[in-house]
Image 1: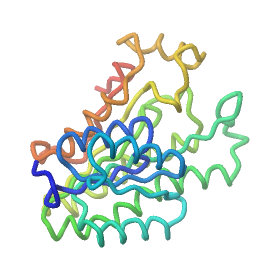
Image 2 (image 1 turned 90 degrees about the vertical axis):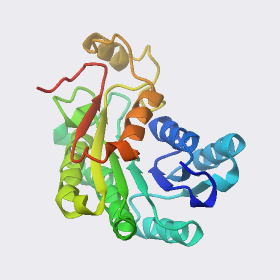
Image 3 (image 1 turned 180 degrees about the horizontal axis):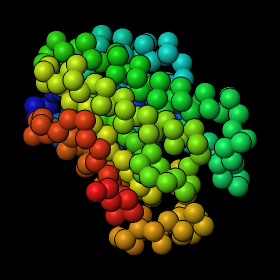
Length: 258
């Protein structure tokens, strides 16, 4: 890929930590200009500084955005287009998974506030990001949209709460809904569904939920963020043009659909 001002533009939501940060780094290594946002101002600042030292500040666009606030999403994409131009790649990675000290709330105790928070961030926020980038993708005849789902949305959930599970299962439907209207414009929409990945959100390896997960994973270990980033990266490339509406499981064999 060409570097500089003609390089393709990618957006990674939640691109400041964990899988999102690994994906941002993967795309920068391959010549993209990458725009990221997160809700935590400190995480955004740290990621921007770290990546700027490694790849150059001119290839980064970083903002603090709350996906539950539609106006902030609109402002982000408007400023990005004014600064750089149209987006070629969108990675919808940002998400929330509320848990208490004893884990997620039992279904009977999930509040409407918690339900709406998770769905507005994980699902509605992703939908609004897609609406923001699709017109430019259509104009240029190229687009790659990758949603980060979860094994919790693919099979019996063991750790995640019901709102998170519902949001991640719905992401697959959102991806499928984009296939027919946009495939003829060179745009694909796919899902990467990680299993248990070693991130700050997952906690340390000694955590009981992680020890229990190890017993279920044939690979005998948790995954690494860069392994998920590589799967996302493949779906963004030109060679993945005929992969559309697919779900790519990255879980060490924990869930293997027929």
